[in-house]
Length: 99
Image (cartoon, rainbow, N blue to C red):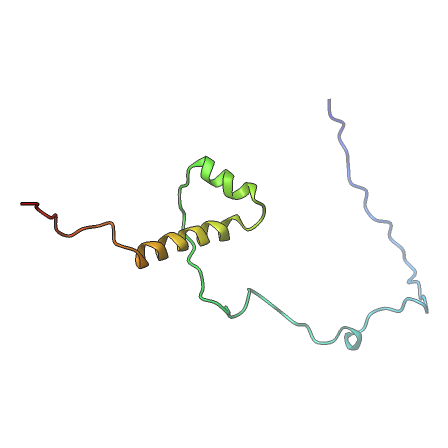
């Protein structure tokens, strides 16, 4: 059986402590706020977010090699595309008829 726990409120102090070794922060000490959001402009072409269904053993193989499995899958797909573009096309437009 779980025991109920309650959070204790912090102790309130009425007197402010002035510590010369640890002064309060001022706006001058902090400087102007800097807001950074997002990754900024892309150096290389932006990739497209998509969803692909892969066989479990294929995904396990790439994940077993460590971090960066998505980049390795992308590289393997790129090699296959380049191999098909530079090699002979496997799709024939016309069947040859031997006489």
